[in-house]
Length: 303
Ligand code: NAD
Ligand code: MG
Image 1 (cartoon, helix red, strand yellow):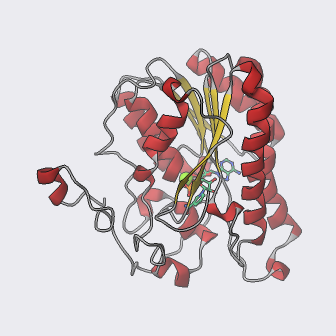
Image 2: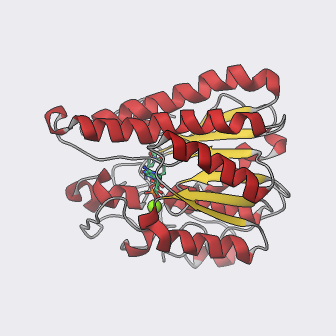
């Protein structure tokens, strides 16, 4: 695991430039969807560092893609802030998911594991039902799961690839949100993980970038629709973050070797650096923030 530098222990200051690993990274490739536990270096999701202060005490959260990466960082942070947490992931990710479930339980919170494929509408409905049943309600929905497969040319993207990316990144949040809405009382929040790709798409992420633009519009439209009902809707737009998505087809091996190297901080973000953002957007004291996209991109890109 990547640790904090010792400087921080003495001064309370942490230099964001030297805080985490920088490129060059080892070229690596895993089969999709990839496991955080097999990455080198293993990402930091806040396992040893996130400290809660009851900001989400008694809240009930469902996080898709909660097994690894950004979703895992949110799950750990939520549990340490006092929330009960349900996570969804693919059956192939059971080993990553089990670590998260154990971490949530270690906080004395309810931890509900609901594996299944979000490309199926019937499963999305079942997911919400199971989460509501297991948690005894729902007031934080984090649509975070995502599929990203880099392809040099549009000619390399099959209809099946295109469809899988659209189903995972656009249809699943639509289906899940429809199923969740009847359970969301005033004060509840919806958070989407979008991307800097929404506004500055890379040439080799033609299909993915379109879905992230859709995720940003999902936030901005739904916030207007649900504002009068007292439900806030916000998004997080990360830049390059060191996660399994990137080593399982999301980025080429060449790109991975210098991953995050072209940002002003000169390194990729770690999922742990985003956990507090998901907490802030869910917390009741952020009550006037809705329809916003919060960036975390090391100084590059726009939310
Ligand atoms: P990750 O691989 O750790 O998490 C993505 C998760 O999506 C997987 O763990 C998996 O459980 C889930 N998923 C994918 N397809 C699924 C399916 N069909 N059914 C159920 N679950 C499925 O990677 P991450 O980078 O933490 O990704 C989380 C979100 O962050 C995604 O929406 C991604 O687009 C977004 N994002 C990532 C980056 C980055 O650089 N890593 C940058 C911007 C946005
Ligand atoms: Mg995963």
